[in-house]
Length: 284
Image (cartoon, rainbow, N blue to C red):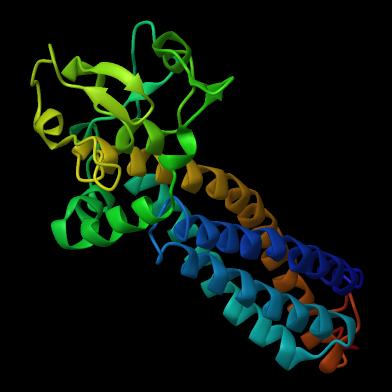
């Protein structure tokens, strides 16, 4: 096991480098929270875990290289809780984003989104009136709907061209009425209700006022949930890879810790602490 110290040093340097994607994932979620996702608490667990892995990896690297038993003990103690926290976050992310997706539409390149397709803690949090008031204002302030407009030689795109566009879940849920309403397309964010049929409350909620649109619709809430699901799944894939590497580093770290203690106790490698002396021969 003499090589275990070198191996744990290499693994900790690797985990230090891999903590950068975790921290980057948290920062990425933070940037999306200020633009489209508009949920500003999801990124903090990742940022805290990323910084913790950085610090603990440095401690483990130093402990392995200098055979510092205290640093190795502190590394193993803290890393256990970091691994547990990262595993808990991954499970939590998959559980709360387990259900829900867009519904494909005939003759449309985009999907429609329905709130009752989602369930669980995240859906209840997003759908609550007090919380959605802040989220809806954030989406409106991001100007995501205002950026949808396209023109050709100064002429707005036709309905057929719009129907062939792949809209994001936010654009589909918040910037246009649900397809089931049967409204007539005028431009990307202006629809005529003449001839339409009210199938849901969202059809009544839709408003051509550019400050209102469908920001209060259930379809907008569902679109946000779909966006969150996509973002969280991307980050979780990276976290799973890093979790596997952390577990390997932890197991090797345990071996390096035992190796350091053996050296501190001046125990020769491969030799037991006590040897049984041979019994003296009895002479008759």
